[in-house]
Structures are given as structure tokens and as C-alpha cells.
Image 1 (cartoon, helix red, strand yellow):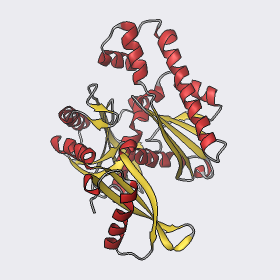
Image 2 (cartoon, helix red, strand yellow):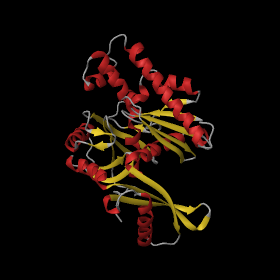
Image 3 (cartoon, one colour):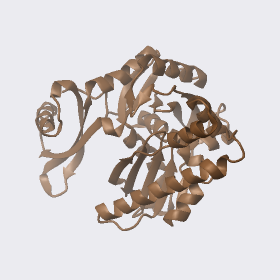
Image 4 (cartoon, one colour):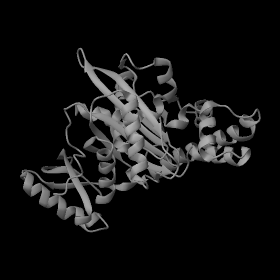
Length: 358
């Protein structure tokens, strides 16, 4: 069995969550104190030069590794074991039904046999892992198994980045799974622990918006749309003649001419709300479901002034900006006010860091 770097494995030693995205790298360290109380010990981020990561693919390993080295040093941590994430588009997942009572070796053989039906390339080119989910719903003699496969070079690129930065990758998760793990903590704090509530998560990244809809801990819908914060950055580049890096920095700081809000920001927010509304309508038309009870925004764009208000207004759905560290205590090096302005971008990194606890 070709293992996907412990995709589904448990991780008990001290572990960092390390999220590598198009726009930058983000690191999170969580610890347990007292009676199972989580504490955000430290977090940090480093921007990536444009083109270092494109559509989830690592285009320049050395540039990314250097950013990882910087973020590790900046954080002040001493932990060198990391959990990394793969973009959902780079991983094929499939639930399959197999006979109960198989040994681990027999399961591996069966999974490889089944995987060959769903994977459009040779098995020796992929990293493959599986997890037994439990008894099959309609057959007591069978079990439900989740298999996951990714092109080997995509996994190896991320492992190589960690190693080049002096770190060791011990867990490889899927970014959407990590985000949902972090979100599960938040929905558990909703009334009645969110039971029976349909929850939609919109992660607005630099290039892509990832949509997940969950009900009682199960993902009932998932989709990606080619819309993200880089569109606003490109508008700023064209309008003010800035470099992409300068435009992105000024977008975040708000240091832009007086006409920016009316001429660039307002149309971008309208477009974002339209994309989200369309995605919701597509969810309704392609599933049996006809409602969403709670909508969460995450990603770097979630805290753009006006984003939450326009999404809530256009969708008519209870909406909030996700706070992945809600309910956690904060370590001495964490500045609470700064965290409030940055937390939504750390949803995946937080979920990866949670892999330390199983």
C-alpha cells in the first residue's frame, strides 16, 4: 500500500499545522491545558511571491521552503513536526463498500483493486490511503471505507518543502477536511450543538472559493468556484499602476486613494455576493435540500470591510465570519486584537494543528 503520509492517521506528538496556499504560508500551534482546554500557543504567517503556488500546485519549491523557514522562525516555536494539507482538487476521494472481517493486508489489497477503477492514472504514480468509516448503512456484513489518492509528485513536493525548511511532515490531510475539522468545533458551540442545522462554509481564497455544506457533521455538498481576492488586487493594479505585491499590501492596509471604495471595492463586494448567491442556488437545484441555516465566511477576504454585511443582505441567511480559535485560551505571545483581524485566514491551519489530538 502506498501511503498518503498518514492522511487518516492519528497524530499524538507535538505537531504544527502548516497551511500552504496561493497567497502565503500560515502556521498554528495548539496545546491542551487543564481539563482538555485548547490553547492557541502561537501562530504566524508569511506571504508568498506571486507564482510560487498556482492553483494548488507548487511551482517553486525553494521560494515556498524559504517562506516556511521564515514563518517557523517568526513563530518562536521549537516543534519541527508538521501536518500539511493537499488542495481538494489534487485528491480523489471515494467511499466504497467492502466485506467486514478482512485483515489489514486483505483490506489493502481490496482497496488497491477498487482504487484502480476510480483513479485515471497508474497506481504506482499515486499515494494512496484509506480509512474504515464503520459498518455499511444497509448491510451488517459490510463496512464503509473512504479511500483517498493523489499524484505522488504532488505529495512529495509538499514533503520536500518541509524537509528543505528543516521540518518533518508526519501528517498529510486534505485542506477541506482540515477546514471542516476546525469548523466542527464552532458548530459544536451553536445552540443544541448545531444538530439538524445545515451549515455552509465559504472559504474565499486568493484564486478560488471553496464551498462546503454540512449537516450533523457530514458533508452533503462540496464545490469550488474560480473567484477570489486576487480579482480585487488585479483591479487595484490596473487602476493605480501598482505592482501586484504592492497592490495586495495596500488592499490589506487600506492605504488607497479616496475613490477606491466606490470605484473598486463596492463592485468587488457586489460580485462576491453574487457568486455566493449563485453557489447557494446551485446547491438548492442539485441537491434535495432547500435551506441553509447558517453561513460562515472564511479566508483572507472574509474580513474585507462590507463583505459580511452584503453577503447577509443578499442571501437573507444568518451569516458570520468564522473564528477558528473561538473558545480557546490564548498563549502569552498571542495578541488578541491582532488575532481578531487575522483569524478567518487560519481556518485550514487550525484544522491541521488539530490533527495532533486525533
